[in-house]
Length: 212
Length: 212
Image (cartoon, rainbow over all chains, first blue to last red; front, side, top):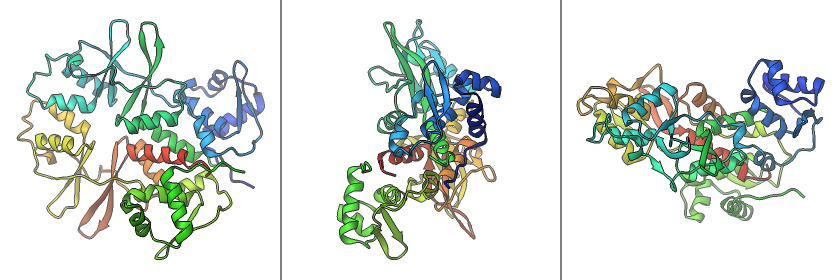
């Protein structure tokens, strides 16, 4: 007998799918009185672990427990969209002072700067803001576009990218956060934010799904 | 046949141990012209994956490939000491301005504050420094002990703690970094720094050791 020890919510999801599958993520969320976004990591882990199968436009169904795949193969199936957070954006003409205040109010470590079409123009890290704050300039008069990181120096990812690939970008490019973008004719539309906090949570989820 | 795909350094280590084991970590490091610290994550992963066995005061030897243990069980064997970074410390009377400059020079996100016996007294995050920098006080006159987080509010870990447990502390207590400490009669001696960057690297290492 192999030890199966899912966290409580994963266990409940598994029961719901066993009894009602095929069932969509939205329907599972409704039954649990939670948002689809909240359930995403659990569904990703359960699918990766082989407990659930997912079919587009059909939903999740119980797979029994399939033959173990290698961990890497499974980890490669973890996607950015299952672990990303909501992005926090500011406009190019916001002052550095206001950006710092905004960062504290939203409690994030990175702000994304957008133009009038809400397309990605820049990235502001806590480090950028701290560097500017000890300079001699008046924070109330410098707009963020003066100090932000711009294209082509912005490192980003897409929501369907592998989480491992995104994690490597965070490490190799030495940034705390990646904008998750959707490419459009007008530019890069920001759909999410992927941070080292998200990766740390994924690492914990992996360990909590005991029987991978 | 199961797919074995270690990274190049792990592969080399495996060869060295196969031909020379039992062999200590120091001896392996010497042969590769690397430090013991650099090799620690690779040795941890190889041991966790069951390729190597380690015996105290004897060294590493090749185990063949043992029966697969569950991923959680293996992940629980990953220790803080295998992934931690070097700590960067400052004294209690350093000014906030100097601390910010020091943070940039050392390129870290957290500084640990020590007393005259080099025992842990406080923690300074980029967020703490940024908050102070937009205040009305002169950064050149405020000492860091005024703004640092103090005991009992400091979250810390020990080098023999499980990496998973430390990762949970980072998330639950919403901090970017934990001091790794050693308890002594005089107080907490700082022996390392564990950050979300370290956890992200561990996550990547897990995926790179294909055949867990």
